[in-house]
Image (cartoon, rainbow, N blue to C red):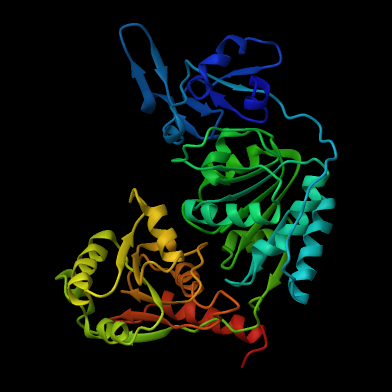
Length: 442
């Protein structure tokens, strides 16, 4: 791969570019711009679009004074003394694409799939509001096939690494001859130019007018929701004539306002692809729930559920400390069960999730990191301290949607353990029931 293929459609710091290409960076076809634009009082980051008072982010040494951007520092520090390098994308050329998917869309899915292509041809941004387990990924296949055959470049992005790790093999199976890049912070695979990219939304900050189509899956999820930097990165990575598609089961007020203002087209799907209704959470009250968890003890309501547990089980906790205390007690109380836990910073997270998928783990404890985008075929879900402020309406709806996702296992149980129902719990249950009614269930 040469410099052009490495840098095309990207915006990178010098340290992000292999040393073997540095001698070519002064070429006339390479765009070179200062990392920060400096005015009298403020600095503007040309990578993430954030503005700051420059005096707040100043570095002074005996030789010079310079400024830096704190917002996107995790991707490498942008400074007023360094540069961002880029090479523009080339025009699209039609190409052959092999699309192999043996599944079949439902009538409702097929309708939305056709609308996706139709609005894409008209360069209309589009929101897909579909319940968890509706088959949003499969509805994208025709759109992706259409765009790739035109020679256009696409990105499917998500705020969550786990979602990307689940999506990538599914797309690779549907497009077996397509090289699909997988980009996320801890990836060890060297970058290679491809027409199809699956990426975290943070990595989009490294692109500039690269994509004709960007699909943002789980657009309402942390850290994307309400994050101006990540929204800027998405818009910056999109070509001026490009199209955005947002996917979510729980659209934000801002997205729905964009629909009302006719900035977004919308398609809705209230029924899961296998025809079964969404599981409605069962609430179980325990006055001493929190005190038991804090002491590393098992509440009786949790023990009762686990004693009768026949399927694999996913247990959600509001924080890591509480989860680990419970994990230790569960290992002691259920020595015959294979139990593990994951959280965002756990080094072997990917390996543990694979084991859960392969049914090598009986019970998996997790923080909200697994609230969306992951599928385990035949599970029940328990939310411990569902009344905790960490669990809002959207997260509780998403967590509930982990149950009954597969055609072979369309049912399961979702339990909310609490010591007082919150508004967020009530709103989540109400939303699930309303979507079931819209889907035709009583």
